[in-house]
Amino acid sequence: MCLAGSAIFRAEDEGGDGGPGEPEPFAFQRVESYLELSLEAPNGATDLLPGTTRPLVAAVNRIAWEIWQRPSTGESEIRNSSVTPEPGVTIGFAVTVGEGSLSMDSVTTGESGEGAIVFTAGWAPQSATVTATMAAGSTASLTFDPPGEAWAYHHSEATLTATLGSSSSPAEVPTGEARDLVATVSYVTWDVMESNYGNQRVENVSTSPADGAQVTWSVASGDGYVTGAGTAGADGVSAGSLTMGSVDSVARVDVAYATGQATSAQLLFTVAPPAPDPAETWTLDRTEMEPVMTVLMAEGGPQQPAGTAVAVTGSAQIDRWDVWVNGLGQEDRRYNYSMPLAYRMVTFTVESGDGSLSSSSVSTDGTGSFSVTYYLGSAPSRLAVAVDADPDSTVDATGALDFTIASPPGDGGGDPGNGGGDGGGDPPPWSLLRTEGEYTISGLSVDGPTYDVEAGA
Image (cartoon, rainbow, N blue to C red; front, side):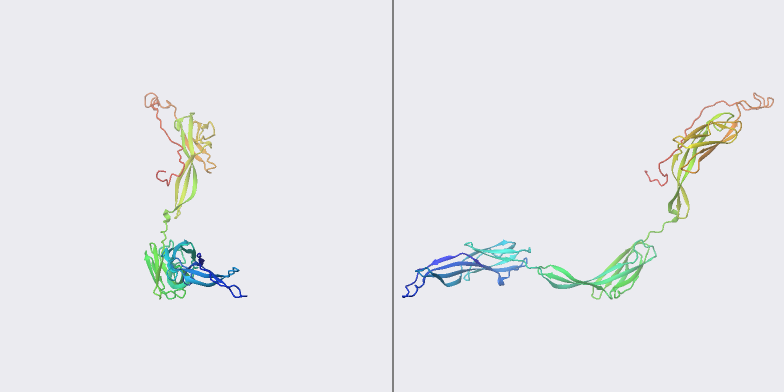
């Protein structure tokens, strides 16, 4: 309720003299009044849900009273107060705080001094204020607050759930093997609560075994074989099994309950790949290092006259071999790489005959090559060569050259009377016909295995 201003009305003074000894009587002086504006909702309810409506009534009343006064003393008093409706007053309305809408922006009071409109709250859950204003500028306001959210039971719901599992892994099951299956069926109920704002929430969720549920077992895909109990027990469990086929298989259960509800569950089993052929399953067993004399030669050949100084050259390397073994125990020796026996000791031994050496030992160079001079004796001989392969191998790279003694030119020793001709029966002496040569490659190596090489590597 609000004061809406005032208006003062004056009238002619009334009065008279009192008798002897009596106080001077009060005399009427004037009438005073003001207009009072009020804004109310039915029953004073100011809680309003978002989006709902509420009628509002604005009332204008004139509050009036008489002023009486003693002329001689100025003493005054109020008499004959009254409250009367004020018709014909224009009242404007506006939402001054928050959101909402009004059915009309203004009304004019009737004989009852009242004017009515309808306020619709906005959808945001927040306070809103409606203000009424008279032409004179006086106002009255009414604030609506959204009530707290209150929840009440609305209805109950239920569902049937099923899960399908196995105590063993369903992955890579060998063909013909069996896996256990466990179907667990539950009946779930809950209460749906609704608030005065129209929101809903779930309360009182309860899960219990679906005792007696009907369970149908099948294979949804694949060629496995499934079997199981047709009814869930008191614990909601139905046990079954799957025998694996030759391809991936999906076990399935379809469940029906006395409430009329139904559900299903599935579980994928993947088939194990076939066992590898042991004859084709190779693993690296060991690595072997093999010293090799790649070149050993005598300049001019192994047949020369006695006493000839022959240049003997050679080279050696060590080959790495990887030995692979399959599931049957068979071995496959695969070449990996070679490297020269560089800067290693070379030992020469005359094993037979009467030849001699410029040195009984030399060292290979960075390419694994070496040379020595061998002097032929008067009889055939054998020269053995060994290149030290330690620490790569406990075995040396070895080789040998066998030399024979050629007769000197013209030394036929024949009988002049036998065979005739110069030199008797001796063959004619040798003379140089031409010189020939050839290229050789020694010490060829690679930087990795020469087997299992990918194309383009």
